[in-house]
Image 1 (cartoon, rainbow, N blue to C red):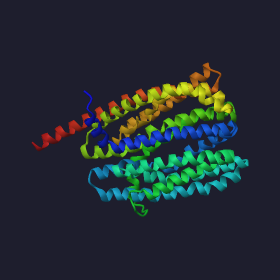
Image 2: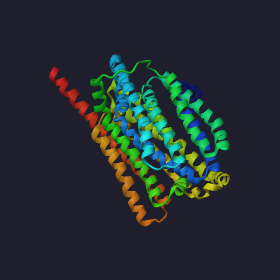
Image 3: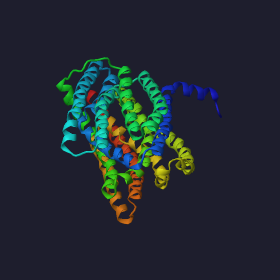
Length: 434
């Protein structure tokens, strides 16, 4: 029987998680609107250039070497275990390392543009990507220190504010400055994000490297980093294939598909940001792997139930929306097909449990499967289909579907393995004391 009091009580208890999800959902239509407005104004050739240059943004992440990944796991775990001094050391060391990394792209930029004959548009795009990479080293550290309900409440407020700024200023800049306005918007967005994250940072500390802590963070984070880096690398393969087979204009036509999928990915990415420290804290406090697996299953069920009606609505809406973007009418069939991948974007959460449990072997299996699915499916589809854009989108869909179900199976194996090992240890410990 429906109980309004119970529903209101649940909403009150889960106010911040609901707020985090809501801020992501507000960001979703805003990003889509900004993207579609951009597509109405900007020629596919220029969007193709931007999409091509951002490939290097993924590769630049190699400088991280897993230090932030290690902190993301160890800091909330240390707090959950009651070791606050060690948690501070994790934060100080990571901050120092990330500030050092932020300088490197800025030093590389002059060397890069003098070594290759880039035109002016490419140079401007590369400069903005370099600034984005440098600033994101710091903002990724700050986000990694968020762990409490109050912290995530601030994060939600920032996301709401950024969405409002994007909605108001992005169309103005793009309308009056065209592609340069779009680039300026990208720059403003990352600067504003960094400034707001800085003022909302949980730890007001100075950078200080403790090499023992740095080594520990590397040992913990490097396997996690390798997995995420390889995933980013694999994600660039469809774009590289389109560039190699076609040109910037063809990649530009495909860009609305990538933008749409990235917009829908905001939700699982936000959920990962919220639940990663929560899972690590819970695991550090209770030692229960099964508990976090049950929580992950609940997240899957709720989000898929939300996504399905949105997808159906979007399929019918796209026929009318595309009329406002005559330069990108060729993107319509690929946009509709791409919507099939949306529920399975939750596969991005599939490595959370492996990371929390620090199960390197299962992290490796997850990444290997992702690379195997993407590359194998691309090769097979390219053999049967001549339309390279169709090859790219179908490979993304089939990869996400395969990875979604594979990751569930892997998560279950990881949890069962840890629970069995934990039970065996408790039994031996009990026998020893007896």
